[in-house]
Image (cartoon, rainbow, N blue to C red; front, side, top):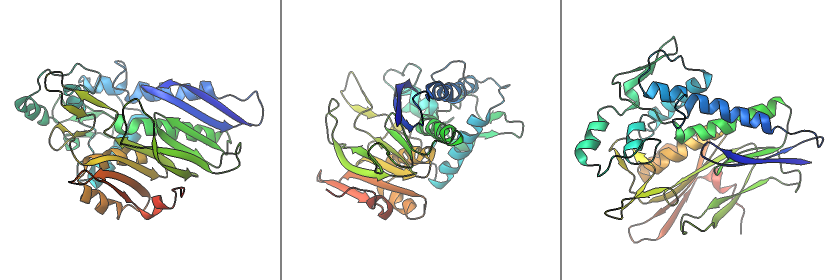
Length: 316
């Protein structure tokens, strides 16, 4: 039989289904403990977390395994994407109104340029004593682009250790699966939201099957800030190379990988990277597949799908 736990965590909703052998089995407390521990380490919205203390400039913080894992993988993706993926954009995230701090009103070029002087993952390092050293005290971390995926992986690891063979973990649209949907006796089926819809709609553009895989989707069609004076929409994904919210023709990116932190990070990176650079990198990443939806110069919808992702799509 399947057990379902739902709730609110990491600033979003979650729905987790897993196979149990008796009605007495319920791992809701274990799930909440994972969210709690991740928050204590890398939540920029929690003032007492390690990341918040480091962002404030406290120098005596010894980072835990959670922070170290996310930091190390961020470094790997930062290098592979030529700096387009950069979790040191925390100050920019706040300035543009997408973070826990108040935005800067009428943010201008001089202010953006100033913040860019202390933005860059090459401006930080972790010592052998597990302390973060910054080239500039105002360097600010933001791990939201992969923290949710990491938390999902940790819940999956907890299930694996408890011997659970079949589960699907969904947190804010990011997903990790194991085994099959034994209730329906088939592979797990998940939907990819259509980027061409109103904010109050929920339409899907594809259905795919997942087995022992994770999927994350990043897009510019739900999360944005509207400038009250100009009416301009600023999407929540920032380009660390320019300091500005993204304005490109890519509408959404769905990434499938063997773990959700990887899928989460690359989905964000591919939203920022130039379209051709994304395709070039995907040809080199053997363990990452993607589905990219974009608009051409005439406003027509284009879809780019790797072979591995194409194989997962349920034919209509």
